[in-house]
Structures are given as C-alpha cells and as structure tokens.
Image (cartoon, rainbow, N blue to C red; front, side, top):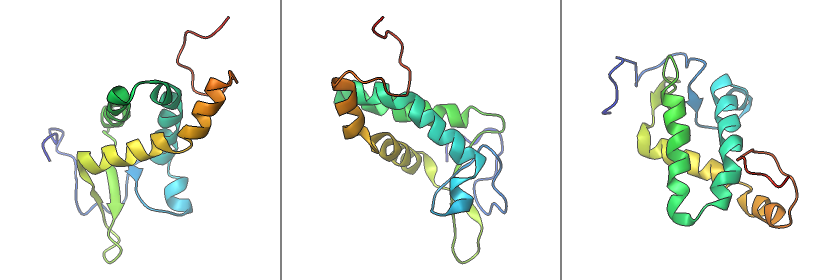
Length: 129
C-alpha cells in the first residue's frame, strides 16, 4: 500500500484503534468509535453528495477517506479474518467503495425530501433564508 509513510501496521492487527473504520456487522463494529465518526462524516457530506451531478460524486467519498486517513493516528479501513481474528487494511479502492455505498444509502429518499423543500440534516450552506 503506497501511503504507509507513518510506518503504521496494515496486517495482523490485534486491536483496532479509535480512528479505524471496521468492516462487518454486529454491535462491536457498529459501536466502534471509528465507525461512529465515519457515519458522522457520511451524514455531513450526504446532502451535497445527493445534490451534485454524477460526475462530481466521487469527490465526496475521497474527501471522507482523506479525512479519516488524516487523523492522528491515521484511521485505517479494516476487515477481520474470521479464522485468525486479526484485522487487516482493505486498501484504498475497497475503502472508497465502502464510503460510496454509505453515501448512497437513503439517497433517493433524501433527494425526494430535498426536492420537496423539507429541511433535512447535513448542512451544505447557502440555505433559503
């Protein structure tokens, strides 16, 4: 993986740190602080993501990915090996895929609400009034 200048561990991780975003299901993954932060970032950018033209949508997944990677220590996107129970980094492409999926969730409903003029969460500035 190209951007490992901090000498961070990317494989064989026993315990993810607070900034890591974990792949998988269940309470441990859902309530992990890195995942809670990830969802907060997705929610913050979702309104702008939904409103922008398709050609610009990829920008938002990259912004969120970069924000997580810019933390100290850098957030990693991890997946657990079911046999060894150790975590490893899924790489930038899969992390961006995961982020795009999170941005798409609920997007059609959000777009309908925005078109109807309802006030929905996720501030992008330039409001009416």
